[in-house]
Structure formats: C-alpha cells, structure tokens
Length: 465
View 1 (cartoon, rainbow, N blue to C red):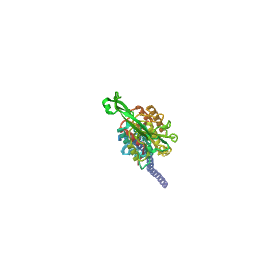
View 2: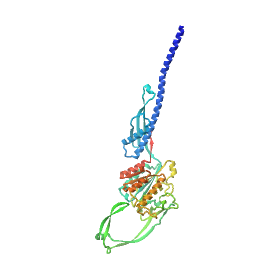
View 3: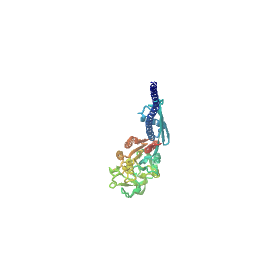
View 4: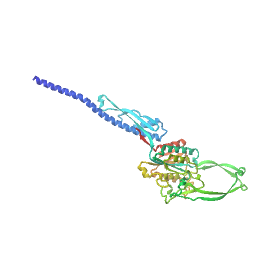
C-alpha cells in the first residue's frame, strides 16, 4: 500500500513538472511566432513606405523640371504632400518628416519612423523601426522628333533675335546628342514665307518659277534740291505690325525741279521662298504629286528667311542654322506651322522623320514648338502669294493648321514672346495642345525659361539606387 501511494505521488509530481516545462516552453515559442508575425507586418509596411517614397521622389523631380524657379524648401513641401497622400491609408505607422536633398540632376528623399507591434508587445517590444531612401535622376532625353518653328519677321530684329538664338541653342545643348539618335530636331524659320532651300530644286514635289529679267526707267528729284525747297515731316507708320515713326519730304510745286533718270534692269530669281498651295492642301502634308509646291521669284535673297534645317541629331548643324537666323519681312504664322509639320514626316517634301506608327511603337514623341512675337500681318491671296493684309484670314488658316497638327497626335507647344496683341495671344494659347503647353514670355528671361521647361519635358526621370 505504501508503495502504491508513493507511485501515485510520483505520477502527480511528473504531471506537474511536465505542465511547468510545457508552460515554460510555450513562452519562447509564442515569442518566436509573435516575432515572425510582426516582422512580416514590418516588411509589408516597409514595402508600402518604399513605394510611396519612390512615387514621391519621381513626382517631385518631375515638378522640379516643370518649375525651375522652385527652391529646395518648396520642393520639400511638394515631396511631403505627395508622400502623405500615398501613405494616408496607413495611419497606424509613425513617420517623421521627409528629408529632401538635391544635388544637380539628383533628387533624394529620406524618411524614418516606426510601427507598433501586435504580438511582441507581450514581450515588452512595443515598436519596430521603419525607414528608407529613394532617389531620382534627370536622365537622358526620351525618343523624340521636335520641330522648332521660329518667327524671324522684322519685329524680331535686335535683342529679340539674340535672345531667341541663345534660348534655341540651349535647347539643342540639352536634348540633341551627336552620339545618340534619341532626339532629332528641325529648324523652320518663317516670316512672310518659308524657305525650303534652293538645294531642293529638281525635287518631284517642287516646281520653280523661271528667272525673269525686266527693265524700266525711273526718274527722281535729287535730295539736294529737296533740302532747299521742301519740308521734312514725320508720320506714323508700321513694319511687321510694329508702329514706327517714318519721315518723308513734303514739297510744293515740283514742275521746275531737276530730275535724274536712269534705266533699271532687275532679274528676279528663286531664293528658296514657296507660296501656299490651294486650299485645303495649303495646310496638308499630302498629295504633292498632283498639288506641287511652287517656288516663287523674289528680287533678292533677303526676301526669304533662312532655309529650313531638316531633322538631324547633329548639334553643329542645328546651331549653325540658328546662328544664321535673320529678321526681315512680315509675319504669316500658318506657313511656319505647316512646314514644321512637314519636317516631322516620313515622306516628301521632308522625309527624315519616322512614320507615326513606328514612333508610337517605341513610345516615341513628335512635337512642334512655335515661337512668335507678333500678330499675323500677311495672308495668302487666291493665287497663293502671301500679299493679302487680312489678319482674319491668316488667323483662320493658323487655327486650321494647329488642328491638323494636333489631329496627328503631335504635341504642340506655343510661345508668345513680348506679344501684346490679345487676339494673337489667345490664338497661340488655343493652338497649343493644352493650356499647360502655352507660354507667355514677357521678357528675355521668360523666353529662356520657356525653352528650358519645354526641353525638360523630354528628359526621362528614373529611380536611382
């Protein structure tokens, strides 16, 4: 009997020891399981924070490109706003303010904080750390074909043209690389007409008027007589829509005035200017076999703008063309736009561009950048010569060619440079792909900023790790 009691007592002691051992072993098992659960939660939150910060750094870098005047303090606020919006659905985590840094083309964001534990709080661990870094770099330009359509009418003479040359050169430096075919650019100067280049003579899409020589006699009263017998007066005049003060002689009876007569012989030649085709082909990039472009005679080369530079990725060729820009004649915006469209084509008259389908296949972009400083002062007549003074007609055709360009999914940027005519400013704004694609440059600094911002639109932004 005593032995049996001892056996029962031993069994009870074993069960008690087993229970104690089991209870003691559950604690580390539970701790390990709790640690695994909270670590998985930490990884999930860490991934959420990383994704939010990646988005924020790219969005902030894009904002910096579009807003070059934004300083680091402004960009930090922008980054914080982007990040807060992305992380708003995880209110339980505790994060500090974003640390923002910018070094040239590199933007870096850093954030740290913690998250509350779920199971490990039992073990006395109430939080686990969170934190990460993200960086974005302004990369190389994306695949693009860009036509610069530049107003070189008489109103651009002087400092305006100098400013344009600087701004356009900067754009070439930013985007066009001789060792890369990513970006190709064309230059289309325009005034009353566009100059397709005399080297295009003989092309199937072009017919050129023959040279014409004429002789006529003219007589004039010498200035020496006018100075003694006439009065020099000032009067209001304009050139390319810009008001000026001109002077003229006002004379009385000139019947007895001496006259000098001479015979003038003048030969008109083709210097590259082309007139408009008949409507609707005047704004189209098609049907050149049956609706040829006509090269017209002019008295001298100064009647035509600098010749078009077709698409190229050679910065030197582009800069040489920009350097050669000259300001003369009147303004007809539609002819510049039409020929800008044609330089982006893969078929004649200018066939250096890729087809629209091929560009879309590689996510490439076609774009046209128009810069003008004044209202239309010329329009085409029924024969295609740009000697009509109808601003209304010129504006109507300009609107039509803008629509033609945008219908082809070409991005259309417009810049009004020191332009005061409200009708024309509205015309340029409406022509742009959207209001964000329109720039009102009231001075030289604004013009440079406009070209810089448009250039940055074509630079890729990539995450940098």
